Image 1 (spheres, helix red, strand yellow):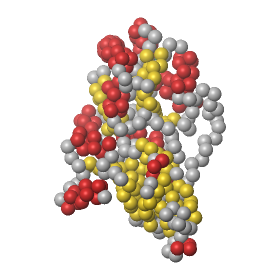
Image 2 (cartoon, rainbow, N blue to C red; image 1 turned 60 degrees about the horizontal axis):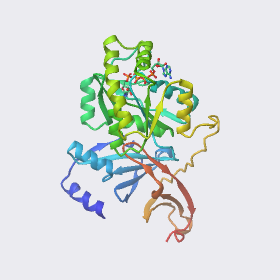
Image 3 (tube, rainbow, N blue to C red; image 1 turned 90 degrees about the horizontal axis):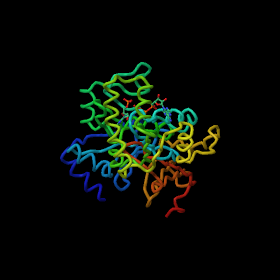
Image 4 (tube, rainbow, N blue to C red; image 1 turned 60 degrees about the vertical axis):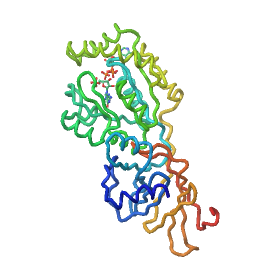
Length: 343
Ligand SMILES: Nc1ncnc2c1ncn2[C@@H]1O[C@H](COP(=O)(O)OP(=O)(O)OP(=O)(O)O)[C@@H](O)[C@H]1O
Ligand SMILES: Nc1nc2c(ncn2[C@@H]2O[C@H](COP(=O)(O)O)[C@@H](O)[C@H]2O)c(=O)[nH]1
């Protein structure tokens, strides 16, 4: 009822809110039901991985963005089946080995992790591919997109803009994978302050001398850029090790040992990468259906006569996450042909 009170004046005044998040593609119709601070939308005739969407109207993220953008805001978040775990934010000074550790993880567990491809205004390095390593972008374009609320976080790092778009995180969740973000300390601080639940790891070098050696040996930066990155590294290490942004510190001395420690803190030590993923329970919702809500349960019913009704239940209390990004943990239960059990 509170949400209706909030939405009604907007509808009467014909307020056009800023719409954040990727919008659902059009479909043959939809049903919708109010769930506290968001509207659950069931698309008709869509594929099983694109049936449930949430239009967030008064969630923490929406309130934050409303304040930040100074306009009315709503945000889309797609419901994804299964329970992919929280994203992982990996931070640390340039050259410490974040990218190397992430590549090792993605190589060993390709079906488990997906990389959040950031936007940047810096020029591509020799081997870097647009859309794979970064989305290489013009400064003016990126600044406009920042104003339009496209980014979960952004920062000016070593003289260039870098940012994580909401879409970059959503693409990974859609693939049913756990998202890894490689971002600087300012970015980690912004994500920590946002409503995206994540775990935060700070990678630190054995010494400044070793950090400098790694940066120089990598051979990707000019002398001027190396010196700038090393100057910034001191402040980043100070912030990373003294603030309460990070859940874990990872000391990257010997690479293989550090990788084993990383796997341990992610609960992956002894995990057999080839073990089959438990298949998520997919249900094709009927095209003709109605949706209702009983306490925390959403009931999707099809069939006209009471005796022939097919009932599918979704427990909204077990949902996790939401905008920015996907709403995880959709779990449908076929509960047969009677509502009596629930009432
Ligand atoms: N434990 C290690 N011991 C020695 N060399 C390492 C170690 N970890 C990474 N390196 C090397 O250090 C260099 C920098 O690593 P990497 O590119 O992964 O750093 P990064 O933290 O991702 O840097 P940036 O933030 O600039 O992207 C690479 O050449 C890599 O091979
Ligand atoms: N705040 C953000 N920082 C980012 C993002 N993507 C990368 N980075 C950080 O930038 C530096 C430099 O990266 P490089 O590729 O130029 O060497 C490094 O510390 C990255 O972690 C981002 O989206 N947001």
